Amino acid sequence: MVRYRVVPWHSLAIALISIAAGWFAAYVAAPKCINLEDVNGKVVTGNIRSVKYTQKSMSMHVESSELGSILLSTKGHNRRLRIGTNIAFRANLQETANLGNPFEFDYKQYLYNRGIIYTQHTDVAHIVPLSLNEGILYKVGHYRETIENLIKSTDLSHDAKGFMIALILGNNDYITPQSHDSFSKAGAAHILAVSGLHVGIIAMIIWCVLFPLDYYGFRRLRLLITIVIIAAYAVFTGLSPSVVRASIMTTFTFAEFLLFRRNTSLNALFVAALIILIFSPFSLFEVGFQLSFCTVAAILIIVPKLREIVNPKNRILNYILSSIWVSLAAMISTSAITAYYFHSIPLLAFVTNLIILPALPVIMVVYIIYVVILIAFGEVSIFTAVIDGSYQVIYHIVSFVSGLGISHIDSVYISLANTFIYLAMVAVFCLWLYFRRRHLIYIMASLAAAMVIIAAQHIIFVPRQGLFILNDFRCTPVFYFHQHKGYLWVLDEEPDAYEFESRHKGMLAYYGINQIDVISADTVNIADGSKIISPFASIAGKNMVIINDNKWKKIRFDNPVDVDYVIVTKRYHSPFKNFEQLFGKGKIVLSGDIYIKQHQIMQNELTELGIPYYSVKDSGALTMMLE
Image 1 (cartoon, rainbow, N blue to C red):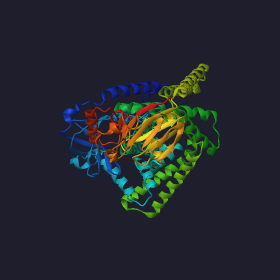
Image 2 (image 1 turned 90 degrees about the vertical axis):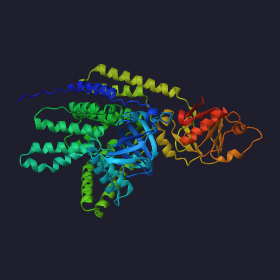
Image 3 (image 1 turned 135 degrees about the vertical axis):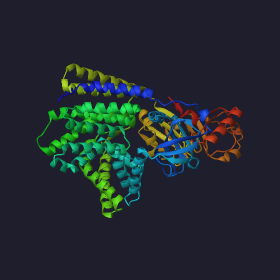
Image 4 (image 1 turned 45 degrees about the horizontal axis):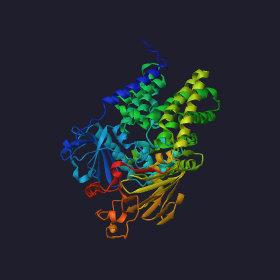
């Protein structure tokens, strides 16, 4: 029998081929533009590929021969609109666009990576289901939805339901923002998304269950069945990059025994990347793909060397140190990526994982048994109590760790250049672990110096004072910051500081803002002599007024009020003809929360009257740096 020797350094060649394949496939698979004038107003058809529900709306990924891939969101629900349903609707597409707020999540690029460049919002009653395409996607989606609905119908607490659905189905839509934040700060967010960890646990469970096959001499059958079940699990949970990566690596590992061939984990890792990038090229630009592959590559390269340095014979101590080495390697490799995307770095992930991960296989087995019992017999109260209790224990551990002052670093800003430099430094460090060449230390020192210089430039030149009228479809946030403190003024909705911080982490990190005061009183003195007397404000020499109702059409002043900006919200429905008498030459700012039809009417009227205006909805946040 011919044997093929696998050289570990072939991994580098496979990695380069993977990246090249990803770029080429991304170019070939780039979504095509269409002329909206040719399709808007016409009835078109499509097939639903995925569905997400919120309290009062739906969001569907629709594949159409006429339109390509589009994101169709609705007002209201219709449970007949499932994965695989062929639908008809009247097209009124818009190009995807970001809100235009400083340092926001690039939602337009996120959709583009999924082949979507057009979106539409419509009433659910305007979508007509035609027929059901009962292919593999429909069947998988139907089974997944059935299990999800079974779990939601139980007497479990809301948080326990969300945790269970996330853990076994890979859908974390039911995890509350507060819970997700706690898991992230504790370094345990990977538990909430089906990943390589879950694939490994499933593989271990199946391997143990099939142990009797070894007794009868069917070891290869045992391996083959495990591979098939892992592949089915990957399809069932949605084929996320981390699951596909882990499934391919598991398959390669088992295939090594089936075919009696040698294999290296790095080769398997990069072949997994190659396969993913060929079939899903835009995964290369997704944070999940980047984190997953950087983490596993670092663990495979760094951890063996750390174990050579410290490898105690005591099993318990060896397990503890191994867990610390794995967490340390993961943190070293992903800190820059995590800081770049999420502006936070967990520091005590090894503590959380050391406690929770040993219990996770048991928890998953209990959850799977619970689902089987739900399907076969219905809810059993004792299982419900056990699952609720297990979640409470996990959440209390996570809350305790995340509540420690040293558990994480928040409001971290790192530039894209420094992110690449850091990753290059990690790569050089990995080379140093194996070759111990002095020049590699010099290269790492040079890269570290470059990072310090770039970070110092940012600290020196970043503005210390600024004013933003932000774009938000629900309200009109006015945000002012001075030094490291920010002030949030929202007149047309009750402001939520926690939600604001979550939405604008990038902006807060860039400007070094670590404290936010919500303006709730009618009269407030804020920093630098600025003052708010609702609905008027004088902030850093800029005078403004928020027009939040229709009473202004009846108000008259002897002399115009001197303001720089007149901010008009969705609650104003009257003409603008008397605005010049009220506010002089103040510039009209149309808020992002104004409905589209009302917004168009306002724009037309202001244009006819010759009144200058700024549309936050169209042009993004109005930004003023005040120093």
